[in-house]
Image 1 (tube, rainbow, N blue to C red):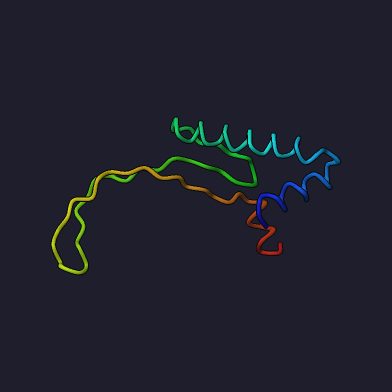
Image 2 (image 1 turned 120 degrees about the horizontal axis):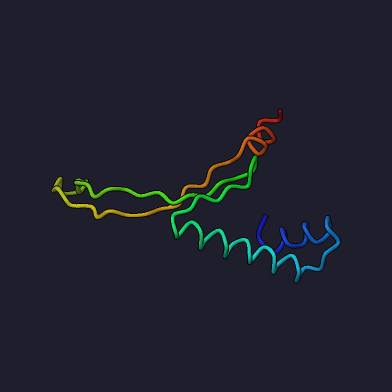
Length: 92
């Protein structure tokens, strides 16, 4: 399902216009992104959570040459499924 299909589905279920649903979805994306960038964890209990992760600098190895290289520290985003979503996928 892509974003357009998601907007249509939510619009049909809620009776709200597609433009209203799109504004809410875009706002959700903006708020979650802002908070994760700040280092806060965002949770929608039972459904999904988003949090920033960090990796320390480390030494790696070039697989082609075998030469050691320094890998810079980096940040990422971890997305975890909540209990209700996991149960639904398992068919429980």
